[in-house]
Length: 305
Image (cartoon, rainbow, N blue to C red; front, side, top):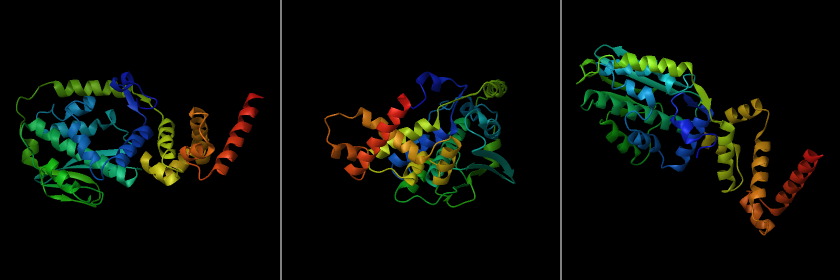
């Protein structure tokens, strides 16, 4: 179970997962997956409608372009529009969809960008009931190494993929975007817009990024001494951003690490040697552990008095 969330909360379309927690989850996925694969693989697993009403806009319009326009307009029903940007524009005989993530670790932004692009290409094909081959696909990040580029090109149906662009983008022919879709469902787009408006008006934020921080710290401590750089990377943000948010929350990096270590220490078997405990809590040696234990003991005595 995700920290701060329940299955019931995740199934409620009114709930919006806290942005920092969402970014942290992306960071963990990136760190635990093969480089350059997580975004594409998640897009392949995301079936139609799994992203709620926003997902349904793509296949509800009379044309592919209608669906794209509604999806960009109602991006706020699935994402934080202060952090995620999506727009679609006509450029002569082409249609260009642009995406950009803000304030994310580069590797996480790359994964999110690949997820969005791969998912949108799949949804356009579902709407048209046929493959829509992009004229060009661009990504803001660097080209992935190894077989990741080939996997991405296969998923997108084109080898015309460029990297290190100003933003993530999909370019398709206007003729493909404006062609009537088979079996249009008249009236459905309006129903979806009304529903999305209601959801946006009653949206609730769930989850807490600090809970995710503690989960990441537990995992990192098990691997050795945690560092601000390593943990912020798993959270999908930069070290300075994490430092700033800790300051805003009235805490510090050292305090959070110490708190998690103290909590972990209480759950360890009392029969373990000091050397084993020090290793499991990510301390360099037993002396560092003893100093921490004295600090925890003093703090506990003061809180009880």
